[in-house]
Length: 473
Ligand SMILES: Nc1nc2c(ncn2[C@@H]2O[C@H](COP(=O)(O)OP(=O)(O)O)[C@@H](O)[C@H]2O)c(=O)[nH]1
Ligand SMILES: [Mg+2]
Image (tube, rainbow, N blue to C red; front, side, top):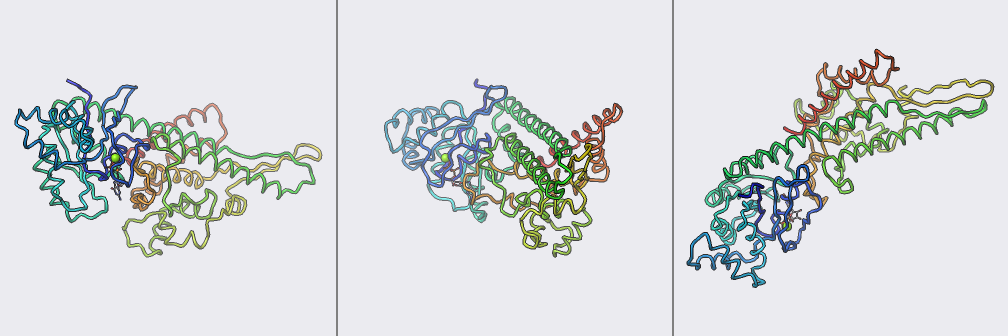
């Protein structure tokens, strides 16, 4: 018996089969198209662990001629188990049934069925023909309902029809499925056929472990980033007659650029970790992450304390306890219109708040050294951390099935409680962050170094759990 579970994703053209496969195998490159009938051959997409496939999904072309196919199957007189192989043999040269050949082929080789359909439209005769063909195959089968347009009035009708033909029926949207939803789908596949149970246990375990590992790696990237950025400064030797302000401005701007680059690198690495093509990943228009790191908007949104934020939300007219998206809140408060997106700059704003330290060191006769940075303020630490958390949130909610950026959505509006922003953390969690912050910003001595390693470990552990929490709810 083939112990690598294999599922053929089948259905009517243009209903979202390739989208489902992309999401399940985390592949941004699978062809997804608004034009029906573009996939003409079946293609296997294995999920591998240590180079070995543990499960295979096959993307197939949509049914081309289900009524004719069913007609043939109904006339067939031989043993039912031979019906599909005989049909494939007899019709292999019929171009009008080529797609049926591609999608039924894997089923004769042991694949289970995932039938994808758009439940936002009414049920038709042709759908019933497809379902009946799939029933005749006798393979373990699950139906996935996806309401493409959001219209749900046909959902119940679909469900009751599907239950007659399928062992399991699930609602699943490839464009918005989270890690937790994908996991639940795999868990359903696990109970579809007892023969696959053990193999699917391994798949689910690998899936969970792999996700945890990504969160561990992500945390380690953030710790490196924070320690790097919180130590960054720019220094220049100058003569006595140098224009101090001019040099400071130049150094400040260089420092800003280096920090921006470090942040972009971090965000790109997060994209890579979650197997997204970073060029395809786009933040929603109103995301506060689109604001420059050194803009006042960034500072105002992320630098706000919980108490201030609540007050601000009330001022913006949000009902108490209602979900408030930080980005939207920014809009609600008119931050982006009043303050504009233009970077106020470290010099003009951060320096005004005395967050950036400027030092002038004497270097003997006629010489001085000007140093700008490091920026060592707890708020700054939380601004960087919160921006990372928001980026993480967007990346894990970005579907591998998104091709057309007009069809993004979902993540554009995130309830504030889901952001996992540091704002919602308890006092002791924040204290733990501050221990790490202190360890990064104080001069190392032997004792301090021990304490610092401990603080970093505690912070890492906390952040790993936090990422896990954000991604599994
Ligand atoms: N709005 C919306 N569009 C979807 C959804 N799922 C798929 N699509 C779009 O429907 C079209 C067909 O999807 P695709 O996965 O290629 O379908 P396939 O022909 O069955 O493989 C593509 O343009 C997808 O972006 C959805 O849940 N909502
Ligand atoms: Mg397709």
